[in-house]
Every structure is written in structure tokens, then in C-alpha cells.
Image 1 (tube, rainbow, N blue to C red):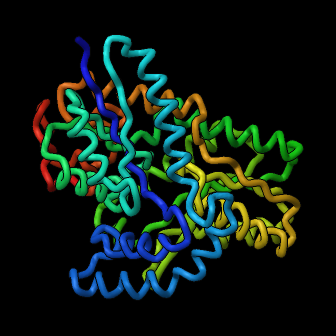
Image 2 (image 1 turned 90 degrees about the horizontal axis):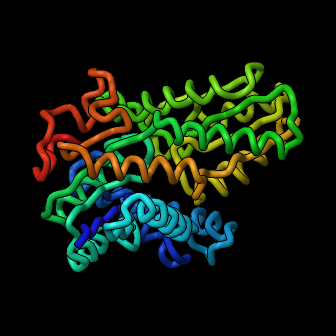
Length: 357
């Protein structure tokens, strides 16, 4: 009899209806990985921020065709189905099932862990749908999983430089360019969610991984394009990493450029891609004279992206330890102390030390 292999897909989650927006935001902002303050202060700030931001955020969710909620779960379910089909073809003697573990809304990590226990998996692969590792995303999801699931797991920490992952981005970008009429004088903005500078100074490798990926993409698009990596979705008074996406949109628009904007840290369509990139920045570009503005679709179920997920899962199943990146072992330079490979390698069946993320 073959193995029962559970592949747990980590993602952010999103509210499923307007009434869920405020509690979703409260869950997000009370995470210690997001607001790094003592518990009483963090919970107070989470309540304050969620109440203040909820009305505007509800309006943004209403702009999407998702019943006033987020399409993220639907998108993730499609990715899970595509991945299951790919893995079934590669592992014909085994039973593979994907479980979705959302960090801040249903199905929560705890719900996914309970489902995996009930299914009695022989192998559990933790596979983030955050391509770049950050302590605020994958690190937070891994911490929640460790609290919910006591059994052994194998973890894929990141895959930002996987060949198929890069190829999927380039294909989406070039396809969007063709559909826009293949204009000249292009500025390609490769936008990722931002982080406060203090998180990066603390050793988080996310910015390095994003910018290295941007360089890889820049080398595969037409040589005459201006290509800039940038960061969106700033929240709060702290100084965030830059350059800011909105500032780059405004600058390129004033120069009369044809703007292509692609998400490189979001693999599914949701509020940051459909509204922030698709609507808010489009209005900004138009108001400042851009020749054109084209949003590149998120990777979704692009065949090369699904192949990345499948290959990483298969590699994780075959590895001797319990933690891998797309490079096999440690991917990040030594100065990035937040890399989950920063401590001793783990042996198969051993839980990752809690100091690793």
C-alpha cells in the first residue's frame, strides 16, 4: 500500500464576506510577527487599526467579484487541485491530498492541522504560497503550525529562484505586453508587499530574495525596458523598505511611459493585486499622463508555477533532512540571520528548532 502524503499550502487568507473584514484585520494585526510589541499593546493596536481601517477596506473588497470578500481561497483551491493532479501523475502508488492552512481567516492553520490528523497522513509537506521567505509570512505560518500539529513534517521554506517560477513570471509579463499592443518605452514595475525597515535590519531575507528575483526577471525581458523592483501596501507610521510602488508609478507616468506592473510576491489574485495594482495605481498612472498602464496577472495556476510547487514537494519527500529551499540547503547569504537555515541542519523526522523562524 502506498503512502498518504499531505501537502499543506500556507497562505494569508482573506475575509469571505463584509462582516468578516474587521475580525480578519484584527487577526492580522495582533500577530506578533506583524506588530512587534508586547501583547497588551499589540492587542490594543490590533483593535484600533482594524476598526479604523475596516470601512475603507470593505469598499475595496466590494470592488471585486467575490461577494464583498476575498477571492484568495477560491484561487488557492484551484492551485491545490492543480498540484494534486500533478503529484498524482508523479506518485502513482501514493495518495496525495492538499490541505489549505490560512493564517488569518478560515480555513485557519488549526483547522488544517486537525484535518491532516484525521486523514492520518504518513508524510506531511509544508509548502508556503509565499515564494520568498519572511519571518512575517512563512515564519509566522510555521510557528502557528508547530503549535497545532505535533507530528513530523518536511518544510519547503522558499523557492524564489526556481527556474520554472522565474519562467512563469516572464511568460505572464511578456503575454501582458503582447496583449497591450507590444508598446515601446516600457517601464516594468516588479511589485512586492513591503516590510518595515526594522524587520529587514533584524535579518529578514525577504527584501534580498525579492530584489534578486527582480534582477533575474530583468535579464529575460527586452533589453530596452526600464525594470524596477518596488514595494506596495505600506501600513502604519514606521519607515518601510523602498522604492515605493506608487511613487514609481507616478514617476514613470510623468515621463509618459507605458507601464507594466507585475506582482512578484503574490501568486494569487486578491485585494493587493486586483484593487491596489489593478485600480488604485491605474488611476494614479492615468492622472499623471502614462501612455498606458497594464497589470500583469498573478501566477495562479500557470503550468510552470504548478510545476515549481510539484518539484519542490517531490524534492522535500526525498530529502534527508526536514527543511529545504529551491537551492536544496541554505539559499540566503550569511548576513541574513532570519533565514530558517540559520541553525544546524535537521535530521529526518526531527522537528525544526523553534529558533529557526
